[in-house]
Image 1 (cartoon, rainbow, N blue to C red):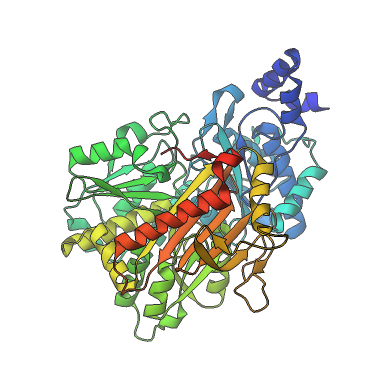
Image 2 (tube, rainbow, N blue to C red):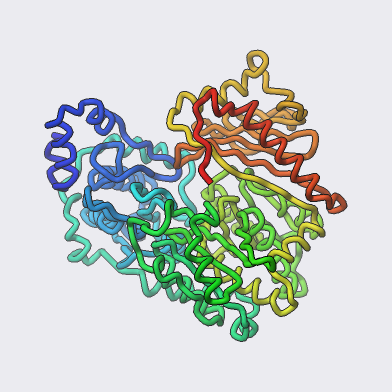
Length: 593
């Protein structure tokens, strides 16, 4: 049976046949004897032949499973339909492009008489959740691997509320996938996207509505149109260029200067060693050099699917400062609250205002909220949790001004329920232009925020580990540190005050010792609160073979000796790595800078 399934894509069929011919039995087993897990991030894997890879067949199987589940959940599925979008990824050796995989996704649904809103060209990831809400579809699929390496692709699913799916939907979809792995009659018929009357192209309509909604977070259009500041934008060989240009136009700006080598889609990401703007100066090289040449002080870089944003600013000493996600969040939080305060109606209540962040992100918004009187809430890591919580707050009449995760994922306002690099880019431009009129740079404003609300110094990094049992043993050791079922009391010389283990649901700071955040059994995550005020988290990544660590010193406004705080943070991180991760013993690969 499997042979028949493979015949439809000559390239992946050839890959499997070559392995058989060359007796590569181990690789055949690896490719054919396991299935990709369908998690809350959907699917994320390398493109190529086999059931644990992203290819025509696995995308068809996933869509069939999703169809079965949606049919069960929504009696009006065939009236409301589904949104499908894609980025610019592709791989010649397996004939796997995001566009083709999106067309196959659409074909499976069209063959079952489901209306499909298939974008006629690549779009930023946030356009899919936005379209799901605007068009009242029951779900959305985005074919993207965001900022992963070029070999990867992914299948991201959004629920009717416009947020990424959360548990238990992922488990239920996986069950449905496993119930119907054989392609149905019609599932391979990708010609349906050209012939079916049920296929619609939402591109113009959604783009127009999205740009119209952007005006809600534009406060200084007049000022923007007169600014002398120049901006450079890199779209990292992905989808961002046209959409960021349009967003700047909506805000009254002259167009940002694009990085010519990175402006057009290129699935090989040929000018960067990895397509992740979060890696900092090393991958922003072309943007920074162009900015120097053009005399532009601010560089904006959207990742390949334009849902995340990196920002750099030229300093007076001629060096560039690349802001961390946490630093940008401090600026966004200050800005969005300041704009709300200046534009609010007379009876608007600050107690109705919320800002959200994932629990591994900086607590700076918490400090601002305490001082200004609005609410701050934390969620589990991953924007899916933020999206669901926003929806919940909006339904209860609350207003959410800003949400973020430290890995440069930001959301200003609530028009989209997912991180959005397009709107974030233009909001940074407006903030910089406004500050320019009072002779302040973004960096100077960041210091003002820290002086007013307390310094929050943080560091985030990771180790690579390709051996899942090693990762598991690292975390199990922490749960049974000096004796069974005992967490560590010290990390080196640093005394630990509280421990929260979201994997098991334990939290020593709660009266009942139970974590307030929901238990997340299938991922590892432990947070340590130290006596010196530092908070550190160790966790696994949901989409990459990484152990990530996050550490932050939260100081009170009167503690302004930053050198002292930085030294303390540095020592604590060294102790954390040495005592808890033990990289040399565990064969962990340090992040290459």
